[in-house]
Length: 380
Image 1 (cartoon, helix red, strand yellow):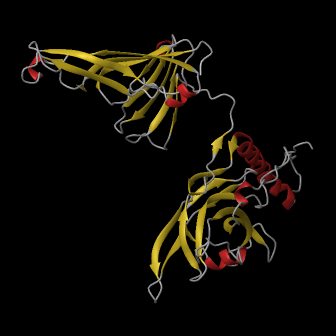
Image 2 (tube, rainbow, N blue to C red):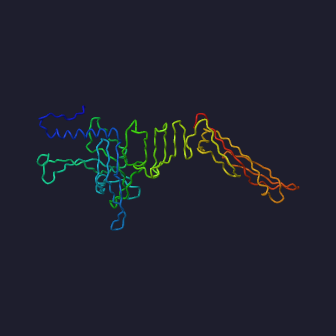
Image 3 (cartoon, rainbow, N blue to C red):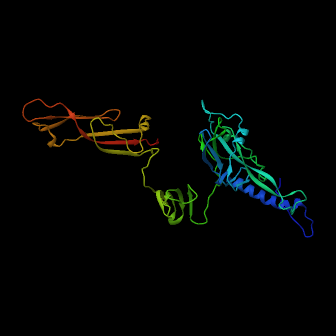
């Protein structure tokens, strides 16, 4: 269907439909932009807040309130909540007459909380009719209504509007959180922004390209660059770089990982993850009899068990300090120095005296070790 916009001529008599079409044209255009270039969800606010309460008998429950905020549904319709909205236990029971409870408990499992748009006629104030006919309405209120779903409703699909469609009729639901309900008290027991691995819907962007008017693009994990907020920065200055770091709250940015224009990688921490084919990792030091040798950073026992890597271990006995020799003993000789399949060290030695006599029994010793892990050319 062709998208239409109104056109007028001098001297034309305008009907109500002509004037309404001016608003509809702009509203439809904004809705198409919102749903095609943005993912639906909460843009600001609309958090579920709680306040602890007790009944006259001392039983605890919570009052739950939806904070003011702004969201966009999947049709591009704006959902504006100007003031705090208390959640109604009666509405919960109306939407869930028999809520599912935890086994052996009176408290329900997590139930999703949705918001959706609702249109309402706003009567004229003071008897002034304005543009509307007698007894009619000059305004349409775009309200927000809370609806309680059932467990599993968050995965239910919602119909996609046609390409030329304007904002929907309010049937599209935006997830803002979850609640538990005390079926005995008929009051809310808890509220949360996420439950069972599902989070409240957050608005996003649909874009194949993100281009900045300047040289720098930043993606961060918060609305403001407060202290500790992580961010990824792509900067075209000085040949270009990709940096992951954290803001310090005073305008500074501390890089944790940097890739420069030549592809060089600089990190302030330890590299971990998949082993790269054709590389060798190593670790070494001094250890003692009975200990298990460590593996190089980034190498796990599962890597070895899978056969994706080759392991070479070298151990060399260390001669003890002569001052530690037992009385009457002058010579120390290693008895064994080896590592078993579990990388456990067996390192012992025996002291001898220069004068005739029996040698002392073997004692635990120390050794130097080197662990080399070679990754096959194909990588892990």
